[in-house]
Length: 128
Image (cartoon, rainbow, N blue to C red; front, side, top):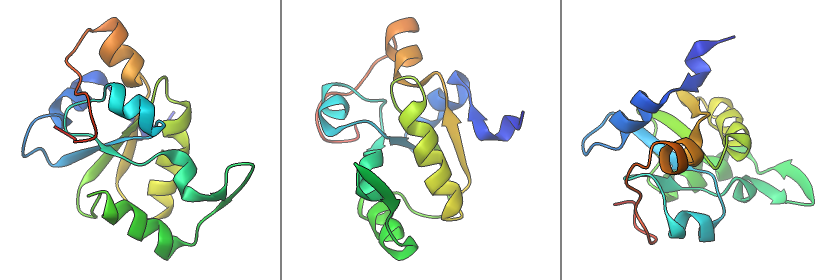
């Protein structure tokens, strides 16, 4: 197993700190993000990276880069992708790596953060 592909809880906690050199990306639907997300997490629903969810063909790389940048996800930072339990984050991890980002997937995701560890979550559409 390539351990660099996986982010653990400690790394996710570190990424929630203001000024962290890592960015969190929430891959869940907007309603899930709004109901609670990791502090500082930007939101890109995985379905936004494909032309049509029923026939998932990736957007061209330049459109994917614009999507990431429009959400504050800029090159030069390590990305930590998460969702509920890691499924949607796996897709986003692949997209980020395809675009050349340094990325990892927090496989514990929001389930571990919220349901197991009972760590604080942010409600609403703002990262903080």
